Length: 394
Picture 1 (tube, one colour):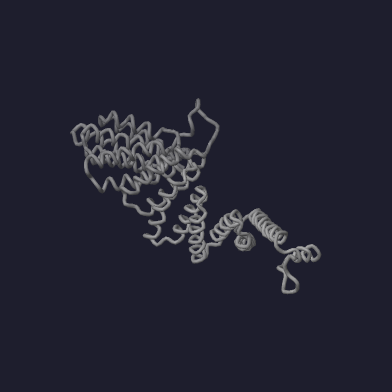
Picture 2: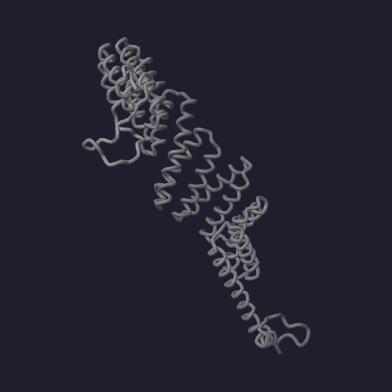
């Protein structure tokens, strides 16, 4: 019980007493703005509360602020207000930045944004370019965490603009690296929605940011995605230009998997241009790399694409070889639990069609050149070239 034998205080009573006492002290010390902010911050709805039916006319459950957190918030608010009166803007900025970081840590990013915006406002009013760059970067990062990519882009682009104007390469690099991430995210979303023109626009921005940041791997990724998007837009010549850049970057980085990916995509572009020679050249390179890296999926896809080209060109034996390898790889992949059974079904259909074309081709050949072999095939159900015993038509 409580001293004097009274009833025990309900849970949260001491925190409530602390909150009231601190509010009164802040006001008594003459910090009016700090009182207003402190009162709101210690009475705001809990941003991490489980969804519950709305109480008190639509307000959510009120946040419970531990006493040590109240002291931290009080100290930084009053320090900022006092420093503002004395014209010490760097201390004001520091106090608001402390609060913004604190609210990020306690998973209340919206309140974090409020204080970072105060930092931005102070830096603009005082012409503090370094502070303005830092605030824009912080706002960009916090919006990224909130999955608000458009707001993140706005602040990171402003950060880059300030760094470029002020000729601060280190800050340009920081802004460019963050822009790579957000541009890539937007481009991927556009690509997923089949909006390839917008995807190209953002991948192009991503490429520029990667070059500015001197991030070779990100530059390669942007080139690859641009090439792929242009293939989807049926602009193979443009695609090849970016994909060749990607291939060169992969060679520079000794990224064999990426190089194989580049070769497969370039082959697709050449197929679109009906340049089978170049398509086969790149598919052979892709197959060689996929064998070296033991990438079964890539081996299967390359064999399938080669089979299609050989089949189209009437090279049916070559087509059957490629489709047989594709079928075996598909069976092996699915039996290992790495694919859907439809993969085997499709591979079987391709192989069956290629074999059918090969048999049909032999059938047409013997009609014109080898009557005896045709008669043997009709009786035995198998076709072979006539041997020395009376072969050839008379």
